Amino acid sequence: MIKLKGITKQYTRDSLGLEEVDLDIDAGEFVSIVGQSGTGKTTLVKLLIAEERPTSGEISVGGWNITNISSRDIPLLRRQIGVIFQDFKLLPQKTVCENVSFALEVAGEKDFRISQVVPRVLEIVGLGHKQDRYPHQLSGGEQQRVAIARSLVHRPKILVADEPTGNLDSINAQEIIEILKKINEFGTTIVLVTHNREVVNQLKKRVVTLHNGRIISDAEKAKYRL
Amino acid sequence: MFSSFHRIIKFSFQDIVRNASLSVMTILILILMLLSINTLMVVRVLTDESIKAVKDQIDVSIYFHPEATEEEINEVREYVGSFPEVVDETYLNRDHVLETFKEHYKDNEEIIASLEELGENPLGPTMVVKTRDPKDYQKIIDALSIPEYENIIEAKTFADTQKAIERISAITTQVERFTYALTALFAIIAFIIIFNTIRVAIYTQRAEIGIKRLVGATNWFIRGPYIMESFFFTVVSVGVTYLIAHFVLRFLDPYIAIIFDEVGLLTNYFYSNIAMLLGMQFLAVLLLTVFTSALAMRKYLKV
Image (cartoon, rainbow over all chains, first blue to last red; front, side, top):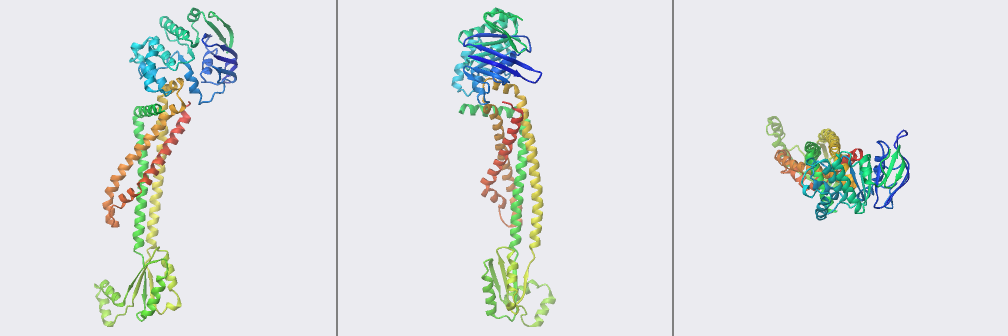
């Protein structure tokens, strides 16, 4: 599903994001990418959603070589990869329903289809009864669930979660991980970027550890080790 | 496709409302620019009309010797009439000339007394010639300045209105230059304001733009609202300018009618050229606004 071959990302002469990274992630996998701050985790996310281009190497997503993806094709890629972030990235002046609908509106979906899809996705994340609330009226965990719902409306094959529990307490973090596991059970590949030891250890899934831009370990059913 | 377009319009109106003061300022400057262009048009029309009025008053008078025979006069008239430049030729016989002369000097007793003392009509017939263009008068005068006509034609006068025309043209050129400069100034101000309007819009919506990009909006979907804003600014400014021009020209027309003796001169010109005038102005403003928006987006909107 995701293939990185000899990926290096050099920002400046002194700033190296990733170095010679080889990584294969199969369809339906749940992979945690762990590492300390500044080890290249966010660079990896940016490369996957084509926000950055690699300095060298090749990246393919679902068999699509996106190494030198054209700016015209980037929106198509981003509709195939759902992304959630630590800061949720919700629009404060829009309701829960509008925030989720927005992802379909910008993709040119018809109103009729939006009105069908959005309530269904909100039910999946357990927010069907709060669709008319504004982000500031929700808890952090609920806001993250809105972001997950928004990332799911395009039915992505891959969901990239960049520190999704970074701003949440342990109870809310647990809720988010449970939702991610549920989504993974439906067949979506999950790439979880985190430095939350508890979360990784409890998942008992594949763990890829980055250090100074390099992969230093890649193990199945592993624990957070650094 | 249609729903995307509909949403682009919706987002562009949201931007306009959020940056209401800048939007109003942009439209105001565009209106001022268009009004100065329309002032240029009014100046043009008035100048053309003034020059036409002055040209209408120009003619060349050919005074025949009182002794010139009818045959000789007819020969000259035929000769002058053969010029394609001549549009009108009026012949005044001796009696008519005398009548006109007396009428002209009726208050000057000395002249009237001298005329009566002579006992006979000392004035010869006169021919008044009008040409298509004032430049052609010199040609007619030169053509008649040949030895064969020396004994037939006593004098040829050409009212020197060329200087008046030149003066009108000089004033017009100066007014036009000033108006061009004013138009350019408004265009530059409009450029700066539109540029900043789009820049501020991009800055205030950077989070929204980031989210649009994240969820897979196309470049056109992100840029579309700003292009629509330019279109909206153009439509409103041209529309308001049209209304202002309509009322101002209707207000000016009665005053202009006093000078040029033509009712509804400006309004008639405006409406008989409305498609060209509004079309050109719409196109010019649209080009300016779209170009400025495109430049601001290129600089500040990385999609």
